[in-house]
Length: 164
Image (cartoon, rainbow, N blue to C red):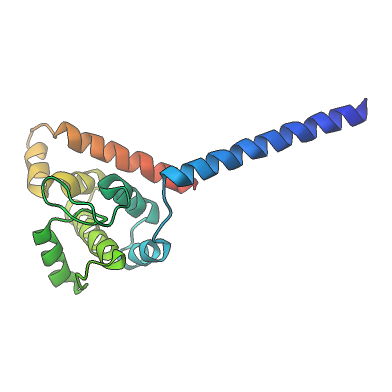
C-alpha cells in the first residue's frame, strides 16, 4: 500500500514538473530573451530594470529589428528618426543600426523620460505618444486609448519577464 502512494506521488510530481517546464518553454517562445547582453548593458548603463527594457522592445517591435511603424518609428525600440538623432547626439551613443545601438538609444531615451517626468507611467505614455501629449493630459485631457493600452501591455509583459 505504501509503495502505491509513493508511486502516485512520484507520478503527480513528474506531471507538475512537466507542466511547469512546458509553460516555461511556451512563455519563452512568446516572450523572447534575445539580446541578453545588450539589454543587461543598457539596464546597467541607464539604471533601468531589464524586464522593463524587454517589455518595451516586445511591445514596440515584437523583437523585429527591421520593424517600421506607420508613423515612421524604426527598429527594436521604435524610435522616430529625429528622436534617434537627438538622443544619439546628447548621449554620445552612435546610431549605427545595430541591435546594441537600438537598445542603448531606446533605453537612453526611456531614462531621459523617466528623469523628465519622475513617473514610470508618464514616461511610458511619453515614449508612446510624446511628452507634449502627456502634458496636455495632465491639464485635464484624456489619454489616447492606444496609449493607455500600451502602458498596460508594457507593465504586463514586464511582469511576465520578471517570472522568466
